[in-house]
Length: 91
Image (cartoon, rainbow, N blue to C red; front, top):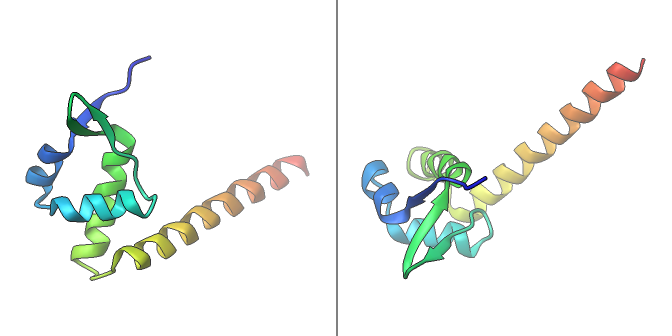
């Protein structure tokens, strides 16, 4: 199954995001940029992350390190919620 790719330049224009912000997210391991034919792309799931992270950055004024911390905490909460659901099913 082929995944839908979106050009980084289009995402930046559409969401009014600086290209350097996308690069910082990538450099910190928060998103994965795919390079094809000398152009940068993001998979659909990554675009959703970029939109969330840009809100945190531009509206809440979180830097990339703060975004990484918040994202890790949310991931951990979601993991604990999944474990709790499984434990409740086992009763």
